[in-house]
Length: 81
Image: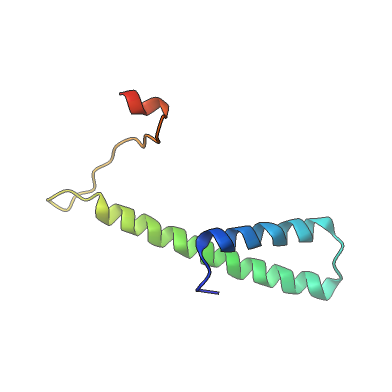
């Protein structure tokens, strides 16, 4: 499961949630799907935590302090400021 890309894991997790919400699976299959969903959710959370640490490292200034600034996505309201 560690070789899954974040987007693939998230898509699979969304599919599992939809399947479980439909209520059409037998109990044993529901439990297996739930277990897979928990593993995927943990994997996604770990990936996001690692991404956050990488961003923090990249945004440190020369003194090693984190610099914060508002995020401005392309074409966002902050872009023109």
